[in-house]
Image (tube, rainbow, N blue to C red; front, side, top):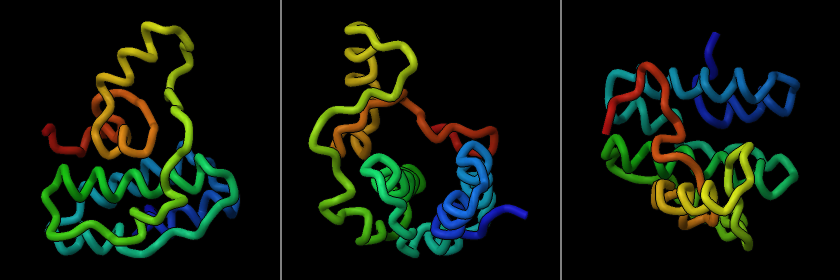
Length: 132
């Protein structure tokens, strides 16, 4: 059974479910929600803090990005808490090269760049996602 909210997905990760399973399942829940209100309900609750700066920050990226992509009526306020931003750049890639860092810096969505995280153009891509 898929997690009903992002907060539930994060709790599952803390309880031992691999992140590679829990987060995509949450995204499926979000993408399959039939209305904007139901989509908003999946991201409204503040997930628990998990300890490290990247893992604490990661949940904040999804709701802001998803809310903007799906033009939801609001973005949960908790995503703008100061500890949801990194002090130094983090390039999400297995290849650490100047060219890859430059590409990721250019391609990253604004919601990620504003937090000093640089990733691919469509970081939450799933088969069920709409193409923006």
